Structures are given as structure tokens and as C-alpha cells.
Length: 303
Length: 260
Image 1 (cartoon, each protein chain N blue to C red):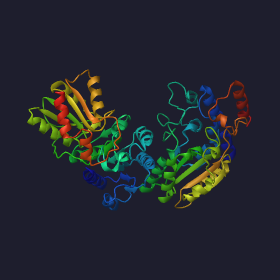
Image 2 (image 1 turned 90 degrees about the horizontal axis):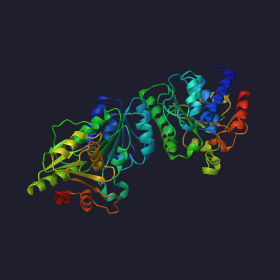
Image 3 (image 1 turned 90 degrees about the vertical axis):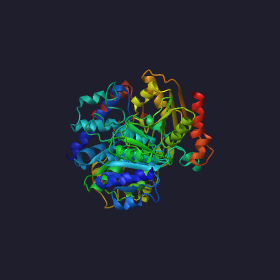
Image 4 (image 1 turned 180 degrees about the vertical axis):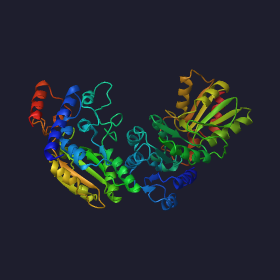
């Protein structure tokens, strides 16, 4: 996903000199080409995320389309008030990019597990929250956010679903990768891969599971949720994120607000905890029962 | 404007501030009154039409609203709505609906990083305008300021000017009893700034300092002021960071401001 993001910003920076990339000293071996190609459009601001976000606001007030980049929780939670007061309240064009959603940096420990970012940023008015599930979605999300003229959050995952799409991408959209009448699996982020694997395993047991990538957690595709609630056997949400306030909460809100009760409803994610256990992203997904086999088990229990 | 006219304007702004804050019993007298000469020197002398200004000590918003009203950006009548139900003149300065305010603040430590971004943009765009920030001394406790303090000299942002209202008192105690800032001039110099130490109530010194730019270095003006300046019983009293005067105190203060 990061390569897709980098390719897209390189394309955009070449045709729009107002695209400016700020990094808080992360991206060794990643941004060297961008830096040499676009002087005046790249600044390593040092390990200083509050200043990075304030700088982004100042640049954006002067008409720049600014990307702030770091990993895990650093460009988001460390500087949350700058995002809220300086960015969102002033309606600025800032795209906040975190490389390493969920347990992408699983072995690095709790500080590097981004498992509350979506809930926290989703709470901010004037904010888009995008967690792509495929390489293609990541590239499209990058372009859409930079062109959106508002504050957006792009959560890049190390895991990706190996899917292609001929769909149109839009903030507030979603993509149905599998149709299925028995249950709909909604995902945000690269865990889409695990949901698709789960759907294939369920098919072997004659369960027809649909899979929808809700890459846009905010704004959210209400009609996809309402259709799934009305026309399929129920909704299961899957996210590499804490359950409180994440994708599952967002989907539950849409159901309740529209007076719709899915026949069954289940949220799969991290159940209100920090992980002191470390390991690869796949190891931790299995450990916290959100990998493909755990999804299959929970769906079978549910239906 | 000549110096007498500027002094007269400062007097009017102090009276406006007093009315605004007393009107609904809310606001920050001490830090608003200490900033008046700084605002006058910026708005009516140092700043050119294209220059940018951020009030980082957002709690002194009353002073900015008054200065803008005295400059014709908003009506003097509108000042009466400050702090009132339904008003957009919030206690901490907001840009929404207020012509002349470029950036909203209120949480300390935000103004300098944003102004630094504006100054960086001007350098990238090869624009000639300056970016000014008015900060409080107490807000220099915030680490975000020191992140920007490292950044601006590193990128040679000599189009950036900060003025620190050095009234030496913060919310509960003096700055030195809270989190010592001294040696303050040395700190900013060590970070690579061109530092000028002035009497923050002396308009001539402030205006001269704003003009004392050094190529390749951002400018830091430490404006030594008196918190609550202009009302003798408020001066240098931490009590008046928040407190509102009662009837007799209000009369005495207005009399003093009128006779200044």
C-alpha cells in the first residue's frame, strides 16, 4: 500500500506544485526520489509531530495541499489537538497518512499498534477516515483525499487483499468484492484479505457470504449497509482495531439511525485491550481471533 | 499615525477590553491589558496589508477584537456581544465570522507552528510578506513551541516574527515559580533566533524592534510587560488572570483608564 501511495503522490506532485509532503523523520529509503525530484515540496520536519501538523495547517492556509506522514499512532494521536483545532476547524486540505494500521508493526510492541486511530479520528467533524483494503484502493484513496480540500486520514496497512477492481472509488463509497445472500462481511483495511479467505472457506460449507470493503469509514456508505441489512442474512463487521468506535460501531449507528435491525449482527475486532503480546501481523490476528479461521468459526456460531 | 495617536488608540482599546470583559463577567483582563501596545504597534505600524498575524495567546482575544474594531474591521457595537449567548466573539479568538482574524486559537502552543508553516509557504512561493505571532510567556511551557523554535531557524525563516508578551505571570503563579523560563533571551538565542528585548509598553521600542530583522534568522521580540497594565490594582496581580471586578472595582478601573 505504501508503494501505491508513493506512486500516486509522485504523480500528483509532478503536475501540482502545491502538493507538499511532510514527514516526521520516517520513510528511510522511501522518499529519497520524491525529495530529489520535488525540492520545495518535501520537508523532513524531524521527530516532531505536533509541529508537523501545525506546519501543515500553516502551509494549507496558504493554499498548499499538504500530506503529513509517519507511522502507527504518531501522525494521529500524538498531535490530535492540532488535527482538530488547526486542521479541521479551519477546513484545510491536509491528508494525514499513517503507515502501519492495526498490527502492521506487531512485533514492535504496543506503542506501534494502531488500534484506536479510526475511532478517535472518526469522532472529529470535517474529517474523512479511509482504511483501504487493496493496493488499488490505497492509490485511489491517496488521490481522492489530496483532491478533497478537507482533512482526511489515510490508514495504510501492511496486509493487502489481492483483488483488482473496476469500480469507481469515492470518499463515502465501498466495494463489494463478493456477493452473498447468507451474510455480509464488512471490513476496513487489509483485513479484507482475511474476510475473503473466510468467505471462500464458508462457501465450502454452503454458506454464501458476501464481502464488502468499507474503505471509507467516514463518510460511510449508508446504502451498502442498509441493502446488506435488508437483503442478506445479517451483518458481520471485521476490523483490526478496537471494537469501541470503529467500523462495527459506525455500521451499527447506520442501522439504528435508519430503524433497521439486521437478522444477525456481530462485530469482530480487538475487544478493549492493548496487546503486550507481540508478533507478526498474521500471528496477532490469529491470537486475537480475527483471522480467516476465527471469522469462519464465529460466523458458523452465529448463523 | 504618530506616537500620540497610537497612545490614544491604546487607551481606547484598553477601555474597549474592559467593557467587553466586564459586560458578561468573563475573559482574561491581565493578559489582554498587557498586550495592548504590542497589538497597536503591529496593527497600526509594523504590519503591511499582506502580512499575516496569529494571536497564539488566544485568551487575549478581547484585545484583538477591540483592535480590529478600532481599525474598522468590525463595529464597536459588535464588541458588546463578546462572550454572550449566540455571539461569534468567543472568549478565545476565532476566525469564523470575524473579518481580520486569520486563525483561531485558544489552546496554547498552536500559533507558532502554524505561523511557521505560513512563513515556510511564503518562502516556497517567493512571497515577500511577513508572518507575525503574538505569544504569551506562559505558553512557552508547551513543547510544541520548541519544536517550531528548532524548525524556523533551521529553515532560515527570516519572514517570521514572534512577539512574546513577557508579563511574567501565568495562571496560578509567576512563570519563574511555575516552570522557570529564564534565562529566556539566551534560550531563544541558543535556538538560533535573532532576539530583541524591549519594554512591551513602549510603542517606539516595539516598532523599532519589529523593523530589526536579520537575514536568515527568525526574529523573537521579548516584550517585557505588566500584567493588568493600566489599572493599578490589577497590575502584576495574578488574581486578575481570571477574576472580574465587582461594581466599585469596575468604577475605579474605568476612572483610571479614562484619565490615563
